[in-house]
Every structure is written in C-alpha cells, then in structure tokens.
Length: 289
Image 1 (cartoon, helix red, strand yellow):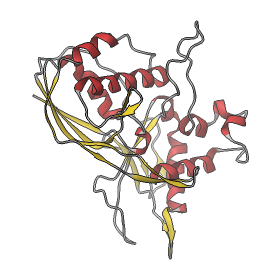
Image 2 (cartoon, rainbow, N blue to C red; image 1 turned 120 degrees about the vertical axis):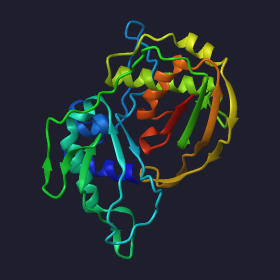
Image 3 (tube, one colour; image 1 turned 90 degrees about the vertical axis):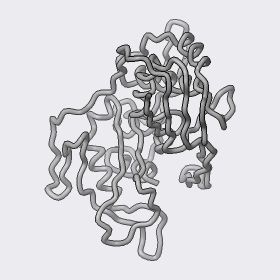
Image 4 (spheres, helix red, strand yellow; image 1 turned 180 degrees about the horizontal axis):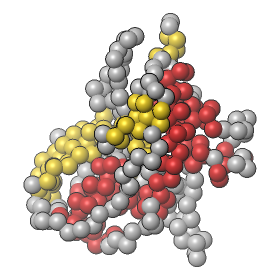
C-alpha cells in the first residue's frame, strides 16, 4: 500500500508528460520518477554485449511500521515507516519528501465510507537527525547522510550466527522459490544484492571471490531453524488483481567459519535481501557469537 501510494504521488509531483508511459518518454533518462520507480536494464558486459543483471534494482526499500497495525483511528498520534534511499536517489530527497506529503493528502488504503485514510507528514529523520520538520515545512539541506558502503575488513573468528528474517524472504534458486534456507543460498542472495546495487548505485561491481565464497558457504551447517512460509496478499493496480508475495520468515542459527561472510550480511541488513525488497520484504537481522 505504501509503495503504490508513493509511486502515484511521486509521478504526480514530477512527471511532465503523464499521458505517456516511461518507455515512450524522451525525458525518462533524466526523470526522477523513472530513476526511482521504473526498472532499467544494465548492460554489465559491454564488450560482449551481454547483460548479466536482468534489471537495475530499485534505489529504495520500504520499512513497514514496526507495530504491524492494519487500522488507525482518526486522531491517532503517530505511525512511522522507513524509506531507505540508495545512491543518486538521495539527491532527490526534496521530491521524495513532497511526494510523501502528497500521499497523506490523497490518503492511504481503499476508499471507505469516509474516504481514504489521510495523514500529515510530521517529520523525516535519519540516524536521529531531523531532515524535515513537517510543522515548520522546513527541509534541512546539507545534513550528512550515510553512504552505502561494503566494508570488507577482517573480523575476529565467528563460529555461530543467528539470523532473523523479520519480513518474508523471497528467494529463487534454480528458478524455484525456496522453502528452506541453507547458508549458501543466503550468501548467494547477498552476493547478488551487493553486486547489483554496487553496479547501479555504488563504485561498480566489487572484486569478490564469488565462487570461493559460495563454496565455503556450503560448508556452514544449519543448527536450528523455525522458518515457515508466510503468504502476504497485495493488490496490483496495474494488473487489477490480488497477488501473493510470500516468503520465509523466522529464525535460523548457523555454525561454521563465518567471519568472512559477516560484511556481506551486514550490508544486507540495510538493503534487504531477495525479491521485492521495495515492498519491505527481506528484512534481516543478525547476532553473532
């Protein structure tokens, strides 16, 4: 719901030629809406004219409200949600803040007896720093923002790692959705996520030992798992139908030589993992021992 409302609001705010689709628009290469919301193919092997990444990842992920509430009454004090921006998307923070304000004026959810749920944007904050004051209508430009950065410094030995899947993790391997999560599948997903984000919004694809990392990840064992498949339903305005976007949710404990994998997974705590991260799927949290 948040993602759909955000897309409609952003297009309303920035699109100059609303009657056209992005694919037919001459402005798509410089348009904020197109950059943030529409997929783009990335040719990563120009010499051989091949594309290894099927599409540029979206430069954002939503973090759903932590209380998981599905209903709010008129006058409720606050609800919060997160919107993490990657790379160049941060340059358009004013457009994005204005789009979220427009979301509030248009309303969220399906239209009921009293219309959609309206809200006012009270504040935008990052790492405890206020970026926008909704009461003063003031955007504080020049505030430092955290860069997306893959830190590969060696760490102390780690032999046990607890991974919590806080929102459904939707992974495909051998073209099939996975209902179990051996460690090598988790690392494969992390490597895909890192490679695509760094190629599109970072310093280029990192020089990692992809095959070696996967081979060593296959030696890590799963000691505990209570994961189960959770199906979530969403309504697609484009396809005019309900769709399921489920995935694995729960807690896993892995054992093995894990230290070299921690930077990859820490990166993905910020960026999420798997498919449909823009909707908030694939939120992971780790605790090492």
